[in-house]
Image (cartoon, rainbow, N blue to C red; front, side, top):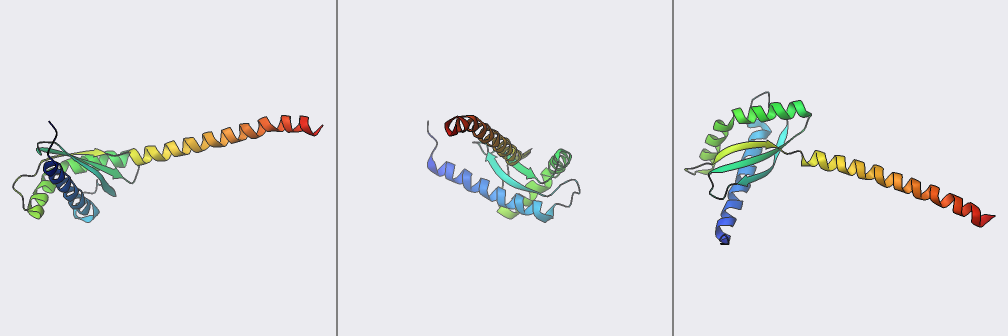
Length: 137
């Protein structure tokens, strides 16, 4: 059965609020030294609203990503209590954090595609040279 529009709209609003509030916490309210500079890229709420997965992009290397993930998992209870206070709701879903590497993967794919285009352009120009020499003779 198709989900009601109102329910989906409510879930999207809650997810956006979570994203904004957790993003504000990441900017300076969490004092754990393990947490590297990072930002929230997406929040996925379970259909029942009992759990949420927060995707976080970290500015740094793999070590900083792992330490940030550990710091965020350790701060889950604090983040939930802050969300409860700020939003004024009774129930805040269980939070799970995940590292979002999509931007790094996109950058790497763009780099590889650029190399491929250069190689194709070089091959095309070298393929034209012998035929140009034959027409000039």
